[in-house]
Image (cartoon, rainbow, N blue to C red; front, side):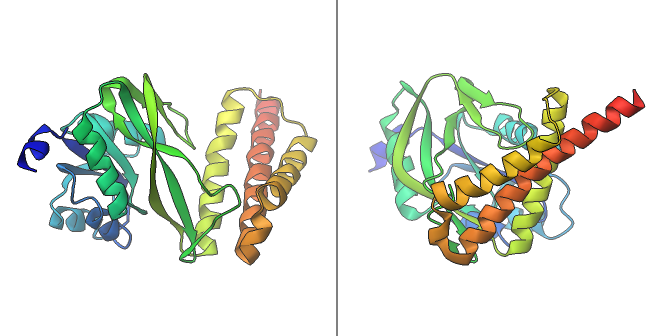
Length: 261
C-alpha cells in the first residue's frame, strides 16, 4: 500500500466560490483524499473564506473573470498538474473517490482527462430525466493538455488528447428551491444573449417563440421530463423561459444597437 501511495500522481482540487458557506462544507468533506484543495473566492461577504481555511484549503481572492476565466485561473494556480474541478454545490461520493485514486495510481500517460456522470438534484431529489441525467462532464484534467473554452456560460474543458469516461458519478445539489432555479435561468439567459449579440446572430421576432416552444417540448416530452412529476414540469417550463429570454434579449440588443447607430 505504501508503494502505491508513492506512485500515485498528486491531485489538486479547484473550487470557485462566492457566498457558499452553506454548501461548501459538504464539498470539502468529500475531497479529503486530494493532495491539495484550492478555493478561489470572488468576494464573499459571508463566512466562505474562513470556512474554507478551517478545512485546510488554500484560499485565493480573485475578482470575477466570468465562469470560464475564473475556473481557468483556479486551475492555473493549482500546485499539481492533475486537477479535479468542482463547484461548491458538488460532492464526490466515496466510490468515485476510489475510482479517481485508482486511475491516478495507474498513471496512464495516454489519457489527458476523465469524464463522469453527474446526478443533479432539486428539492433533495435526484432528477432522472429533463436532460439532467446522465449529464456527462469532464472534470478530472491534466492542465497541461487542455483549457476552458472561454464561453460565458456552459463552459467546457477542451482536452488536447484522450478522454476516458469513468463508471462513476458526481453529485450536484443543483437547486434547493425554484427560486434558485429561476435565478440561474435568468443569469444564464442574460449571458447567453450577449454571446449571441456579439456573434451577430440573426434573430427576428419569431425566433424567441420558436426556441422557447421547442425547448419545452424537448425537455418535457423527448427527454421525458413528464416522468419527473411537477418538478419536471417546472424544469421544462424554466428551460423554455430561459431559451425564450436568451433570444428575446439578443433581439432587444440588436434593435437598440440599430436605433443608436
